[in-house]
Amino acid sequence: MNDRDRPAQAEDPRQRLVAAAIDQIEKHGVGQATVRRIAAAAEVNIAAVNYYFRSKEALLAAALEGTIRHMLADSEEFLARMPDDPEDALSGLLGYYLEGSLRYPNVGRAHLHDAFHADDYTGAFPTLFAPVMVRLRDLVRAAVPGLEERAAARRVVAALSAVFFPAFFSGLYAGLNALGSPADRLAYVRELARQTLAPSAPPPRSRPPKRG
Image (cartoon, rainbow, N blue to C red; front, side, top):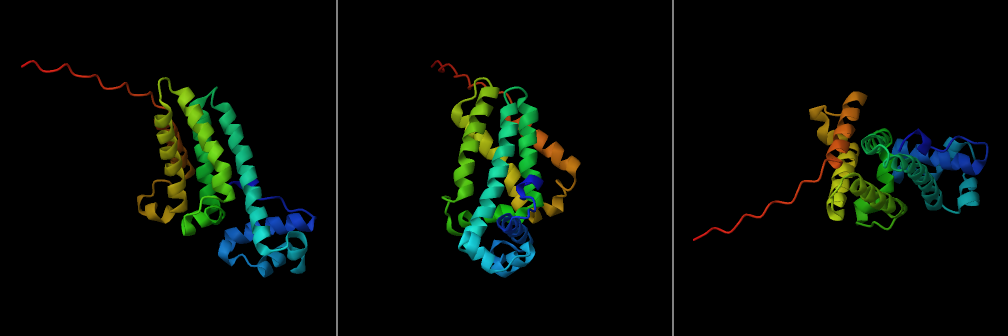
């Protein structure tokens, strides 16, 4: 997530509740984002949550879906550039995901809460992000002559995993100090983009049978 993923503070109580919910998720985690905390941050009465959303769960869902919609719109801008400049657009997209996930880790974890805890991938984020991955696979395949669809899919899996895993589990790699600065992270995503768009290896040549 990036700065655009946080809805701007507004006078409308509904929008203030959404913005406050996102802030509380990031500060305390989705499990500790209570109605009392959200209402206090939004400077509204607790009853406003039920009035506008009927339940805390509906408010949290609306807040998280708003961040997804922003992310999808930003992703589209990068994907639209890939046919003209694949490496620059892909490194930009991967950098956007990496920086956003590092900046707002609890919002990212909230999107995947059910996937982590219940192996449930039917939520909003997995459902809405799936077409982005398919489109990225097709764009990678189009950018690399001779690359088969499944090979392109494997490259997308590798690239996205290389971005999201270090973001969600940054402490695991802290001792390496590999991604500690913006320059390090820029070099990292550029290398990922180059690897993802590397020329397709030709199939191995069959050897002639040995003569007895």
